[in-house]
Image (tube, rainbow, N blue to C red):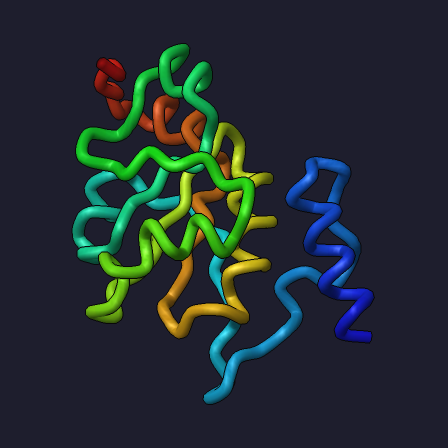
Length: 140
């Protein structure tokens, strides 16, 4: 079963889709492995969490980004955690943003077994963040 779940997660990361059952796993203490919810940028900041935009450089350039967000395309969980792990060592939340929320949901599922931090996948992604009135900054 674990091998099947890991395979399903990897397929989701590849953009093929995620199988049923995502989000049904529970961490120790009864906490869900991640949350799929919409947060405004102000709400993201209020958590004190690390905001990571996992889109690609062309996507960042197309729409702009959340000011002070870490820009790091998610392709390999080990590489990703090597780069953001030190910033999460204090236990802060990991807040993931992509274009629509699909990639962040898949990434959160993969990362949930690897870090104890609360993980939030921003539902609706940058599309919804911008639609809520946020004015993104340009990527230099």
